[in-house]
Structures are given as C-alpha cells and as structure tokens.
Length: 312
Image (cartoon, rainbow, N blue to C red; front, side, top):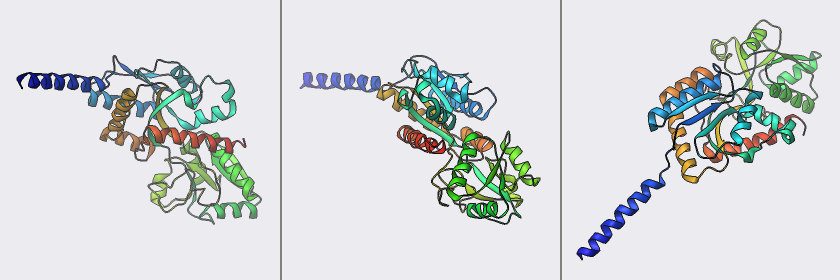
C-alpha cells in the first residue's frame, strides 16, 4: 500500500508537470506589428492592447510600426515569420481584401497564410443626410437622384465609392460621387450644402445627436449600436456592404496551445476598460471580438463581398 501511495503521488506530480507544460507561454518578447504609421487609429488601439496584454499576462510586449500598402507590407513580412507565437500583426480588413481581389496573384500571401486570433472593433460606416433633406432612407436618396438629374454624395475611401456605384447600377440611379480626405470633411461638405448625402465614420455622431443630420443607412453588414433603428444598405434591398474590421493575426502554423493562449490573452485585453475606452474614443463604437474562427469567417465573407464591389 505504501508503495502504491508513493507511485500515485509520483504519477500526480508527473501529470501536474505535464499539465503545466501544456500551458503555452512565449519564449521571449511578443512583438505586435502595426500595419500603419504611428499616431493613427490602428497604432493607438494596438499599443493599448499590447500594454494591457503585458499587464495582464506578465509577457514582454513590443510594438513595431510596419507601414505600407494599407497593411500589405506588414502582412507580407508576417506571412514568412516563424509561427512561434512571438510575432503578431494588426491591420484593417478592407485594404488587405481589396489588394487580394485586385492583385492577389502578385501578393506573396493569401488568407491561408495566417492564423487568426481576434478582431478588435469595426469602423461603423454610415450614410447620412442633412436634417432637411427630402428623404429619410436609401430609396428616397435614389428617387431624389432621379428627380434632380443626379445626387452629389461624398466619400473618403474607394470601397464607399464602389458601394454607391453598385447601388446606382442596381437602381438605375445617378450618384455624382465627391472624393474627400476624411469623415470630418465629408460632414462639413454635407452641412455646407455642397453635397446632398455623404458617408461618415464617427465624425457625424455629435451632429446626429444635435439633430443637424440624419442617418439614412448603415453601410456595414449590421446596424449601428448608436442608431439601431436605421437599417443597413442590405436591408434596404442592395446586397452589398463595407465592413472595415481591425484584426490581429499570426503566421500560419501556430501550435494549438500557443493559438489558444494568445487568443485568450487578446480577448482579455480587448475587454479591459482601457481598451474599451480607447475604442470608444477612436471609433465611437464598442469592442467587437469575433475570436479566431469568427475572424477567419469575417475575412472569407469580406473577400467575396469585395470581389462583388469590384465586379469580379
């Protein structure tokens, strides 16, 4: 019996060691590469996430900016990095998907080149009009364009322009699209009466609250939390959307324990109060973490949608 007790005790110690060994921890500093310059939204959110991960896990986190091509340069390097959990990348879905659709045969990576860990948030893209516009929804804007020999609509990103062209083609409408540099400039163009409608990604919210503008559609795949009564473009009869997600990936080939631990660490960081506050300040929205499988599905669905935007 004594021998059996010793044997059981030894087995318990052995299994305990194996259980601890199965829990992955990084063998060195974990570098989070940001696919954009310092100071932008992606950089700001990435740095707050890395800081929270370091605080919560005790890991040594390093942040590096790797700008170029809307994140393409960073993801190019990430695709050939060692899948040891020590190198992660944070980018925005739309620029990557657009490049994959337009010149995927020239890129050294595809969606299978990465293991996906988390999404951080999605930029909520609205279509808005002034409060006195003679329409309240997308159908009204389409009718206005037909009655007035066209409608001026401001945008600041290529996918927005393509979404309106897709809608115009399907509805036989005439949108005259005005290129701007930012959401803030689009709102000012709208308030100044230079356009009848515009896109916006947060800068419009104070004017929505004051009643100076109204939201006529969500350009995303889902409705916006601050305006749940406003239907999406898809709900208004046009099978298209624009969903810029901030997401985090690693080189393909992570071990299952490494992927699991990194995903949990990211989830805990994204749900922390400092990161929530940073997302609200930068994006005017809440965190939206789809997890590893959901992140991959978002990109697969997004690739199909972007191909549709470009008529491919």
